[in-house]
Length: 233
Image (cartoon, rainbow, N blue to C red; front, side):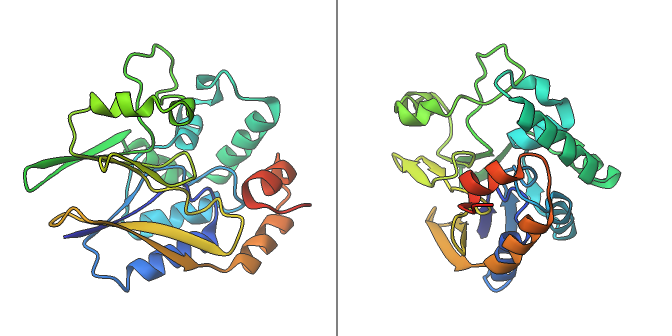
Protein backbone atom coordinates (compact mmCIF):
# COMPACT_ATOMS: atom_id res chain seq x y z
CA UNK A 1 0.00 0.00 0.00
CA UNK A 2 1.07 3.59 -0.58
CA UNK A 3 0.66 6.47 1.87
CA UNK A 4 0.90 10.14 0.90
CA UNK A 5 2.31 12.34 3.66
CA UNK A 6 2.54 16.12 3.87
CA UNK A 7 3.09 18.67 6.62
CA UNK A 8 3.14 22.37 7.49
CA UNK A 9 0.64 23.67 4.96
CA UNK A 10 0.33 26.79 7.13
CA UNK A 11 -2.74 28.32 5.53
CA UNK A 12 -1.46 28.01 1.96
CA UNK A 13 -4.65 26.88 0.21
CA UNK A 14 -3.11 26.89 -3.25
CA UNK A 15 -0.24 24.60 -2.26
CA UNK A 16 -2.62 22.23 -0.47
CA UNK A 17 -4.93 22.12 -3.47
CA UNK A 18 -2.04 21.17 -5.77
CA UNK A 19 -0.89 18.46 -3.37
CA UNK A 20 -4.35 16.91 -3.09
CA UNK A 21 -4.96 17.04 -6.86
CA UNK A 22 -1.64 15.30 -7.52
CA UNK A 23 -2.25 12.67 -4.85
CA UNK A 24 -5.53 11.77 -6.57
CA UNK A 25 -3.55 10.96 -9.73
CA UNK A 26 -1.32 8.51 -7.87
CA UNK A 27 -2.20 5.04 -6.63
CA UNK A 28 -2.50 6.24 -3.03
CA UNK A 29 -4.34 4.25 -0.36
CA UNK A 30 -4.15 6.71 2.53
CA UNK A 31 -3.24 10.35 3.22
CA UNK A 32 -1.63 11.59 6.44
CA UNK A 33 -1.04 15.21 7.46
CA UNK A 34 1.66 15.86 10.05
CA UNK A 35 0.08 19.05 11.41
CA UNK A 36 0.37 22.82 11.19
CA UNK A 37 -2.39 23.12 8.62
CA UNK A 38 -3.31 26.44 10.24
CA UNK A 39 -1.22 29.47 11.21
CA UNK A 40 1.04 31.83 9.23
CA UNK A 41 -0.72 31.79 5.82
CA UNK A 42 -3.90 33.64 4.76
CA UNK A 43 -6.35 30.71 4.45
CA UNK A 44 -6.47 28.58 7.62
CA UNK A 45 -10.23 27.97 7.42
CA UNK A 46 -10.16 26.99 3.76
CA UNK A 47 -7.24 24.60 4.36
CA UNK A 48 -9.11 22.94 7.22
CA UNK A 49 -12.12 22.51 4.92
CA UNK A 50 -9.93 20.65 2.42
CA UNK A 51 -8.46 18.40 5.13
CA UNK A 52 -11.89 17.45 6.45
CA UNK A 53 -13.52 17.07 3.03
CA UNK A 54 -10.82 14.62 1.92
CA UNK A 55 -10.94 12.60 5.16
CA UNK A 56 -7.21 13.09 5.80
CA UNK A 57 -5.71 11.56 8.93
CA UNK A 58 -4.09 14.38 10.90
CA UNK A 59 -1.77 14.65 13.89
CA UNK A 60 -1.58 17.89 15.85
CA UNK A 61 1.17 20.41 15.19
CA UNK A 62 2.21 23.25 17.47
CA UNK A 63 -0.15 25.67 15.70
CA UNK A 64 -3.13 23.38 16.31
CA UNK A 65 -2.04 23.17 19.95
CA UNK A 66 -1.90 26.98 20.22
CA UNK A 67 -5.48 27.01 18.94
CA UNK A 68 -6.74 24.22 21.22
CA UNK A 69 -4.74 24.89 24.40
CA UNK A 70 -3.78 28.57 24.15
CA UNK A 71 -0.58 30.44 23.39
CA UNK A 72 0.54 30.23 27.02
CA UNK A 73 1.93 26.74 26.34
CA UNK A 74 4.83 28.46 24.56
CA UNK A 75 6.65 30.91 26.85
CA UNK A 76 8.77 32.20 23.95
CA UNK A 77 5.81 33.57 22.00
CA UNK A 78 5.87 37.32 21.35
CA UNK A 79 3.04 39.84 21.32
CA UNK A 80 2.68 39.81 17.53
CA UNK A 81 2.53 36.02 17.47
CA UNK A 82 -0.16 36.01 20.15
CA UNK A 83 -2.26 38.47 18.15
CA UNK A 84 -1.80 36.27 15.10
CA UNK A 85 -2.98 33.18 16.98
CA UNK A 86 -6.01 35.09 18.23
CA UNK A 87 -6.84 35.89 14.60
CA UNK A 88 -6.58 32.19 13.78
CA UNK A 89 -9.13 31.47 16.50
CA UNK A 90 -11.52 33.92 14.87
CA UNK A 91 -11.23 32.06 11.55
CA UNK A 92 -11.70 28.45 12.61
CA UNK A 93 -15.29 27.19 12.76
CA UNK A 94 -16.85 25.11 15.54
CA UNK A 95 -16.99 22.02 13.32
CA UNK A 96 -13.30 22.43 12.45
CA UNK A 97 -12.47 22.78 16.13
CA UNK A 98 -14.41 19.60 16.87
CA UNK A 99 -12.38 17.82 14.19
CA UNK A 100 -9.08 18.97 15.68
CA UNK A 101 -10.14 18.01 19.20
CA UNK A 102 -10.39 14.41 18.00
CA UNK A 103 -6.85 14.41 16.58
CA UNK A 104 -3.88 13.14 18.59
CA UNK A 105 -0.20 14.04 18.82
CA UNK A 106 0.99 10.78 17.29
CA UNK A 107 -0.11 8.09 14.90
CA UNK A 108 1.47 4.65 15.13
CA UNK A 109 1.14 1.93 12.49
CA UNK A 110 2.65 -1.52 11.92
CA UNK A 111 3.47 -2.64 8.38
CA UNK A 112 4.90 -6.11 7.75
CA UNK A 113 5.93 -6.33 11.39
CA UNK A 114 7.72 -2.97 11.32
CA UNK A 115 6.64 -0.08 13.53
CA UNK A 116 6.16 3.34 11.93
CA UNK A 117 5.56 6.62 13.79
CA UNK A 118 3.95 9.75 12.38
CA UNK A 119 4.08 12.99 14.40
CA UNK A 120 4.61 16.70 13.88
CA UNK A 121 8.00 16.67 15.60
CA UNK A 122 9.78 14.50 18.14
CA UNK A 123 8.01 14.65 21.50
CA UNK A 124 10.04 15.37 24.62
CA UNK A 125 8.51 12.97 27.13
CA UNK A 126 10.94 14.11 29.86
CA UNK A 127 9.86 17.74 29.72
CA UNK A 128 7.44 19.16 32.29
CA UNK A 129 6.43 22.00 29.95
CA UNK A 130 2.99 22.06 28.31
CA UNK A 131 4.68 22.45 24.93
CA UNK A 132 5.30 18.80 23.97
CA UNK A 133 7.95 18.96 21.26
CA UNK A 134 11.72 19.01 21.45
CA UNK A 135 13.33 22.33 20.59
CA UNK A 136 14.46 22.65 16.96
CA UNK A 137 18.01 23.07 18.22
CA UNK A 138 18.23 19.25 18.38
CA UNK A 139 18.44 19.34 14.59
CA UNK A 140 21.15 21.99 14.54
CA UNK A 141 23.36 20.43 17.22
CA UNK A 142 22.79 16.90 15.86
CA UNK A 143 21.47 15.58 19.17
CA UNK A 144 18.44 14.36 17.24
CA UNK A 145 20.44 11.21 16.42
CA UNK A 146 20.65 10.24 20.10
CA UNK A 147 16.94 10.89 20.55
CA UNK A 148 15.82 8.64 17.71
CA UNK A 149 18.24 5.87 18.73
CA UNK A 150 16.13 5.44 21.87
CA UNK A 151 12.83 5.26 20.00
CA UNK A 152 11.47 1.79 19.32
CA UNK A 153 10.38 2.43 15.74
CA UNK A 154 11.72 1.24 12.42
CA UNK A 155 10.68 4.43 10.65
CA UNK A 156 9.65 7.91 11.80
CA UNK A 157 8.03 10.70 9.79
CA UNK A 158 8.01 14.28 11.09
CA UNK A 159 7.65 17.86 9.84
CA UNK A 160 7.96 21.18 11.70
CA UNK A 161 11.49 22.16 10.62
CA UNK A 162 10.26 23.26 7.14
CA UNK A 163 13.42 21.87 5.51
CA UNK A 164 13.44 18.21 4.54
CA UNK A 165 16.21 15.94 5.83
CA UNK A 166 16.72 12.35 6.92
CA UNK A 167 18.69 10.65 9.68
CA UNK A 168 20.15 7.14 9.31
CA UNK A 169 17.29 5.98 7.05
CA UNK A 170 15.14 5.88 10.20
CA UNK A 171 13.76 9.42 10.45
CA UNK A 172 12.42 11.55 7.63
CA UNK A 173 11.51 15.19 8.07
CA UNK A 174 9.38 15.75 4.99
CA UNK A 175 9.66 19.56 5.08
CA UNK A 176 6.93 22.16 4.61
CA UNK A 177 4.39 21.91 1.80
CA UNK A 178 3.04 25.41 2.48
CA UNK A 179 5.84 27.71 3.65
CA UNK A 180 7.50 28.11 0.28
CA UNK A 181 9.41 31.03 -1.25
CA UNK A 182 8.77 29.93 -4.82
CA UNK A 183 5.97 28.28 -6.77
CA UNK A 184 6.79 24.70 -5.74
CA UNK A 185 5.27 22.48 -3.10
CA UNK A 186 5.90 18.86 -2.12
CA UNK A 187 4.66 15.74 -0.47
CA UNK A 188 6.08 12.30 0.35
CA UNK A 189 4.98 8.87 -0.84
CA UNK A 190 5.72 5.97 1.52
CA UNK A 191 5.44 2.44 0.13
CA UNK A 192 4.61 0.19 3.09
CA UNK A 193 5.62 -2.97 1.18
CA UNK A 194 9.10 -1.89 0.09
CA UNK A 195 9.61 0.86 2.72
CA UNK A 196 10.67 3.14 -0.13
CA UNK A 197 10.31 6.87 0.61
CA UNK A 198 9.89 9.24 -2.35
CA UNK A 199 9.47 13.03 -2.47
CA UNK A 200 7.25 14.54 -5.16
CA UNK A 201 7.86 18.18 -6.08
CA UNK A 202 5.19 20.04 -8.02
CA UNK A 203 4.02 23.56 -8.82
CA UNK A 204 1.14 25.47 -7.25
CA UNK A 205 -0.69 28.70 -8.10
CA UNK A 206 1.76 31.13 -6.51
CA UNK A 207 0.11 34.16 -8.11
CA UNK A 208 -3.26 33.41 -6.52
CA UNK A 209 -1.60 32.68 -3.17
CA UNK A 210 0.17 36.05 -3.18
CA UNK A 211 -3.12 37.74 -4.07
CA UNK A 212 -4.81 36.16 -1.03
CA UNK A 213 -1.89 37.19 1.18
CA UNK A 214 -1.89 40.81 -0.01
CA UNK A 215 -5.67 41.18 0.28
CA UNK A 216 -5.88 39.75 3.79
CA UNK A 217 -4.26 42.12 6.29
CA UNK A 218 -4.02 39.87 9.35
CA UNK A 219 -1.75 40.25 12.44
CA UNK A 220 2.00 39.85 11.75
CA UNK A 221 1.28 39.47 8.03
CA UNK A 222 4.13 41.66 6.73
CA UNK A 223 6.79 39.92 8.82
CA UNK A 224 5.34 36.51 7.99
CA UNK A 225 5.24 37.34 4.28
CA UNK A 226 8.94 38.20 4.29
CA UNK A 227 10.36 35.41 6.43
CA UNK A 228 8.17 32.48 5.45
CA UNK A 229 7.14 33.29 1.87
CA UNK A 230 9.85 35.63 0.60
CA UNK A 231 7.38 38.43 -0.13
CA UNK A 232 8.18 42.06 0.67
CA UNK A 233 5.12 44.17 1.51
